Length: 64
Image (cartoon, rainbow, N blue to C red):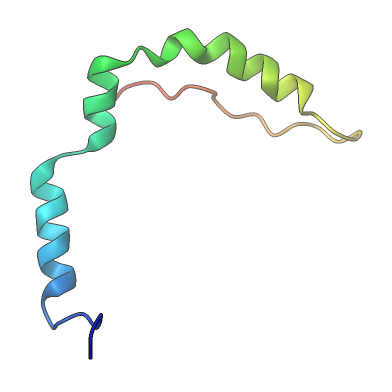
């Protein structure tokens, strides 16, 4: 049965992912996402449709 996961394959994959680190943390160390804040907020305003209130969300999440 090609393609079928073994009994511990998912657990092994999760262990490998956790050991390799969070890729978003690596990106944060290289890219200053604050540079994109103005453009993202402008795009959010342009994309507003209808008479309803827009869902407020943070365009750029702050680092923990």
